[in-house]
Length: 521
Image (cartoon, rainbow, N blue to C red; front, side, top):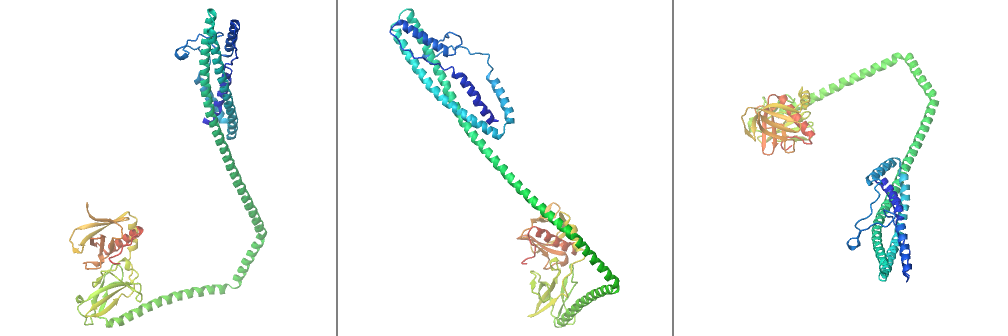
């Protein structure tokens, strides 16, 4: 919109310039004569020429009033019948708005080029006006000097006429100076407009080139896409023709194969059915033999363990499932030392022959397996009277029934609460009422009512495992260290609740990239 207004603004200035150009006074050179008559005639000619070229309010000289420094106080009133500047601006703005809707970028570029040429022409004409104005000042000065020289030689009425002519020349000089100031201002504005139009023309050309490059790129991409689509359509058409050509042959071949199979089944139905029955019998025999082999392996392991236990005065009691307790006791047919005088160390291993891992802190005669022990063999070393004995479970620890479904039901909740009793705190016996052990997806909390004993998020400093030391009910107790310097031994209501709490907390900790284990694991 601003560019369109600028493109039309110079046209209005060009019209005004041509209107005011005719108002520049043109002076005739006058050479004063020695005779009074010739001088008066020359003054009359000059006055008539000046009055003919200068636009006055009337057909005769206006009645100017000169102030200090030869300034004109009263000027003739301009014609008030012309429209106001606001009306002209509103009209031009409306015309420009309508024209802007119809102009394209290319039209604007062409108009800018034309306007730039017209602005250059205006600048050239302004230079000519400067020369004309300078000549007018020179002529007025010479005329005033001539009139001053004549006034000294005149008297009476002629002298008054000469003085009146001198005042009119001075007024004309002032008017010429004012016109010259207006021309200078118009020249400055024309130069600004020319520079603005030049920059706008360059921007319009850049915009046209940019749009042209974008259009060419779009055309090239569309052409490439059309060529690719044409190639794809041709390839698809060739494939369809080939498939139509090979279709009858393939269908005929399929029909022949099906017919051959049907004939074969008709001629040898008994043989095919017999082979299927033989395969099923072989599968059932393999399953039976594999089950029998597993049973034999277990019996051999029991026999080997029994033979080894003849030399070992200690045995391992307890069910080999999660939720039970494994206890070491002296054999009834041996003269073993008192078990209270022996030292113990429990181990877990993937199998009896694999490398075993020591369970840190498990140095009592009783050990309650935890969820981490499921699928592993548990062993215990007994050191008594400088003699070392080893007892081992018959097989890997089995999971407890219903534990998996219990954990899955708890995971549907945002927080799971368990009723516990604090048996020990920081390694010291502690008697307390029941507390609530809350396991969340981001933190674990131990509280009673509004009082919070501990609340920590999952971190590498947190430890949680089944109890490994002295406890009244090892299968129901777990060890929890929320942070360094604070630890609890918590006893749950049942073995299943204790194992579910351990499995659930380790699952949530793993989701937070934290592994919950016991001390020194």
